[in-house]
Amino acid sequence: MDRQWQQVARLAAFDFVRELSEDGNIPVRFRPLSQFDVDGHRLPLIGQPGIFKPRLLDRPISIRTATPRPGRKPPYDDERTGDGYLRYRYRGTDREAWDNVALRRAMEEGLSLLYFAGVAQGLYIASAAMIVEDDPEALTFTVALAPISSVVEGSLHVELNEAQRRYYLRVVKQRANQAHFRVEVLQAYRQRCTICELRHPELLDAAHIVPDSQGGRPVVSNGLALCKIHHAAFDHSMVGIRPDYVVEVRDDLLAESDGPMLRHGIQGIHGRPLVLPKRVEWMPDPEALELRYETFRLAS
Image (cartoon, rainbow, N blue to C red; front, side, top):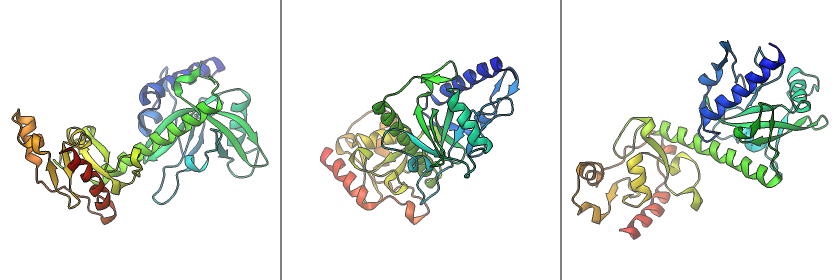
C-alpha cells in the first residue's frame, strides 16, 4: 500500500483503539484488535509479544507486553524509570535485527505506536508510545507513553513534560493492576457474587477488602467478587462481612420498611455465609476482613 493509505490506516487504527478502550480507561481484548480492517483490508493491530508490523504497513504499529504470570513482576513494571520513561530491550543483541531496525525507523520518522500492556490472557491496557532514544550499547530503546487521544494525524503525539510522563506511566500501571486484579478475583469466585451468587460478569466487580487507599494489595485474598449493589452496600458500610465469612446487615436497615430490593437484596442476606473460592490461597484474608468489619461496626 502507498504511504498516503498507510497514514490514513494508522490514523484509523489509533481512532479505533481510542474508542474501543475509552482512551485507555478500560481493557481491550485480542480478538477485535486482531480483526481490525480499513477499507475492507484486514489490518491486525496486535500479534505475538513484542513488536508487531502488519503485512500492509512498512512500519510497526504496536508493541505488546507479555501477560503477567503468578510470582513474576510484569514486564512493564520492570522497565519503568524514574523520569517517566520505559526502557524497552532489543530483541537479542543484533542491532540490525528487523524489529530493532523497525523501531529505530519509527523513532527517526516520529511515528507513534500502540502499546498493549498485557493484564490477563487476551486482555490489554492500551496507550500510545513513542520511541525517543536508541542506546545500542545498552541494547535498549527509551519509550514515552501517552494517552491515545494525544496522537496527532496518526503519527506525532503531544510532547509531555517529565511530571506528565511520570503521572501517565503510573496511570497505565494502575489500570493494568486493576484489570489484572478484577480478572483474577472473578476467576477465583467462578464469575459469581460471593453474597448472592449472581453470575453475570458484566454486573460483577472485584472489591477490595482493605481499600488500596489504605494500603490494601491487589491480590485475590484481599478481594471479593461482588455484584454492583452489594459492592456499593459493602463500600458504604451498609453490609459487613465477619472474619468467619458471614454477612451482616446494619441494624437500621434491618428495621427499615421499603420495597422488594431492600427486602430481598439487602435484608435477606443478613446471616448468609459467603460462597468462597475453592483454593486456600484465594480465601479472603481473615485479618483483612477483621479490619474492614471494624469499620462496619463503627458505622452501625
